[in-house]
Length: 374
Image (tube, rainbow, N blue to C red; front, side, top):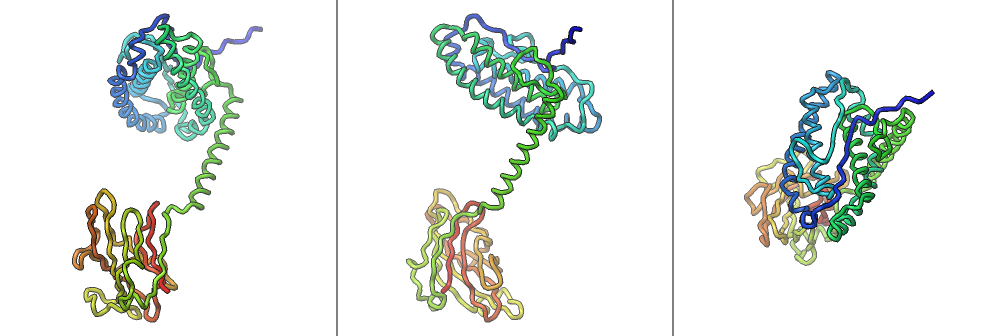
């Protein structure tokens, strides 16, 4: 008994083979394609926004509005025409509509699975994305070789042409599946006549995709737990008593971090009488540190109150109660290129407890100037 012939995959892509091609068009292909690239980018942005509406329609009704489906397919069709033109597969300039030597068609699905949208399809398509990515890089090399051959002979070698077309065909099938334009799982094949993959292939790909996602999640989690996203600490050890006496010179406290030159000038402990605007809590006192900052970078440097931190025995990374620039201007402020500023920073510290360290800078990937007190 003869086996039933399976229908080809519902996403069809093909490019007519050109027997002869223009050398000068191949030479200036990227320049010629620039207007098409710009138009493709604009309509792709609109398509990306409409994609969320399409997915919502699938979740609510289990189907894609025909007009929205046609819009998505139309955008993809123009994109592949542009890509085929840039890849030298044809000399015909990308057309917005009508006949063109690049065929791209997607069969409209009357129903689309709600539960497979986005997450399921992304997971099951992951193994195919890996394969397609490898093939895509190989096709870039093939196109580079074909470009040289066209310049010499005016022809794109047919075997290389078939390979590039097959790679694009496989890629477009995976994209269409991932976007939920079809529920049929793509075949692991470049052939134009290949049908949808069998159930066993889908199951194997689902397991492999799940493993890949689990490994990625575990890797990201491990990285996030073990990597310090702050920058390097630049530490100076200085005498707290000498700092209070004003006996510490600028050379002893100089630290350069994040294109800012930092100097800890002096400290006042307690500073309750000087800082009249703030009343410390019962059993606490105010401590004032004076910094001198110089911007060594090429742009303005913003200074925020939480750039300054204080640590003592039972408290770390304590924010200031008050920070002012030039004795009068509240933070945040900006320091111009090659300009300097004086910053008074006030912390609240428990009575009888001496600060352990005070710092400036830090944050995401930024270095920190740390002054440890002896």
